[in-house]
Structure formats: C-alpha cells, structure tokens
Length: 152
Image (tube, rainbow, N blue to C red; front, side, top):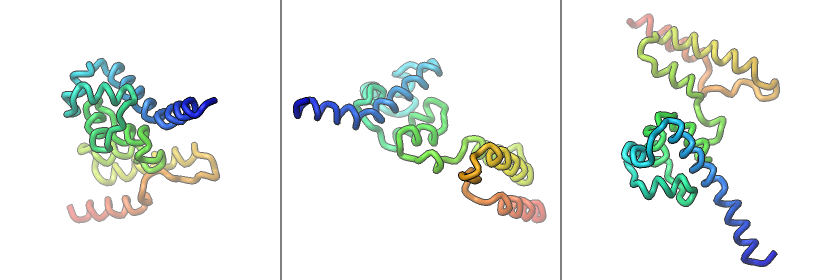
C-alpha cells in the first residue's frame, strides 16, 4: 500500500464518525418524513450545509446539532451523544428529563417516579456498574419535594 492509499484509509477512519452522524440524521429525517429543505428551515441552516452534514462532509457544532435535533423533534442529548460530543453516561436519560419537565406532576410525584425508574435501571444494570442514572441522589429530590409541599 502506497503513501496515498494509506492517507485515504486514514481519512476514511477519521471521517467514519462524521458519516455515521450524517447517516443517523438522514435516517431520522426520512423516518419523520421531513424533506431536506423543511429540516434546514426548521434548524435554521442552509439546504447545502445540511446536505453536506448528511453526507458526512461537515461536522456541525453542538449548537447546530441542537437546532437539527429540535427540527427532528428528538432530544439534543441523543444527537450530541451520537456526534461524540457527549459520552453515553453523561447524557441524562430522556425519561428523567420528561418526568422533571412534566407540568402535570407534583414534585412528590416526580420524585417517586424518578426513584422507581432508578430502581428498575439499577436492577437491570450489571452488578459492577451500579446505579449511574441521573446526577443527584433520589433522597435529595424527595427532601426538596417535601420542603416544597410544606411551603405551599
């Protein structure tokens, strides 16, 4: 293999994650039945730029990925993780975010649902991994929920 061939192979290896991200965005867009032009409009980027992202020729910033995620109606964490900007365990599971953002639930209900979710995830996780879901202990959320109920 010559120097040029080695350079091409190295280029393919380096562009692999960017192409994977582009393929993922295209798959999400086609699954949502959104045209390239419509997604570009929703995300606030040009058609050619989005096309280059989907073909793996451009690596968008975190801000642009967040706009694309909004346009696709998927979580920004999913797209940022796919892009390698967030590590898998750094991203808050979407279910926890949905619970915390639900305006119809009281703080006590949110704490209870989060605790139940963490118990199930912990039981399903390998013993050596432990409970890595979320950022703060459940007890703190319960305490803050109890304080909120006392003050209202």
